[in-house]
Length: 250
Ligand SMILES: [Zn+2]
Ligand SMILES: [Zn+2]
Image 1: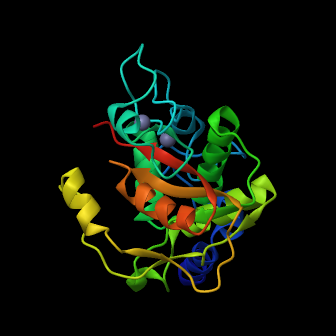
Image 2: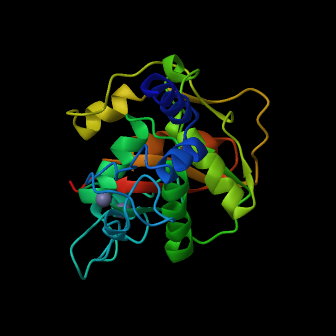
C-alpha cells in the first residue's frame, strides 16, 4: 500500500499544480508557503501564504521623476539624470530589493518556481498603472546570457505574462546578449559600464523604429543594464520606458 501511494505522490508532485491539489485534498501532501513554511490553507493561496503576499507592498517615498531611483524628499530628480538624461524616458520599480519581495524574486529566479511569474507580473502591472505612461507596443525583456538560453529564463517568462496582461506583444528576440559578462555584483558603476560595453545588440532584421517599448528586468542596482539595453533600442529608433520588480538601495 505504501509504495503505490508514494508513487502516486511522486507522480503528482512531478506534474505540479493540479496533482498537488488532489494530493492535498486526499491528505497526502500539505502544501507549505515557500517563504515562511506555514501550511497553505486557503484555496486561493499558491506558493506563498496570504500573510507573505501581503508583505509585498509598493515602494513609498520620493523617487527621481526620470529614473525612479529613491532620493531624499524634496528633490525632483537624481544627480545623474540632471547631468545626463538616460536613454529611456522613465523607469520605475515596484519596490526596494529587500524583505519578502527579495525572497520571492530569489525563489523565482534561482528556485526556478515558474508559477511565481503570475504574482510577479501582477506587481509589474501595478507599477505600470501607478507610474508609467503607456500605451506600449511591446514588452522587451532584458536578455539572459547565451549559456542560459535553453533553460528557464525568468525575465523572459515574466515578460510574456506581463505582455499578455497588457494585451500587447512580447518581443524576446529583439535584444541579444552577444557577449558573456561577469556578474555585476561588487563592481563600481564605471566597472559595470565597462563590463556591459558592447554586450547587447539589436537582432538583425528587428524593426523597432517608432515603437513604444516597455523594457523589463527583475532587479536593478545601478541601472547599468537598463541603460545599455535602452541605448541599443533607442538607437534602433524606439521610445523606451523601463520597468523592474525591484531596485537595490544604494
Ligand atoms: Zn508565508
Ligand atoms: Zn534619476
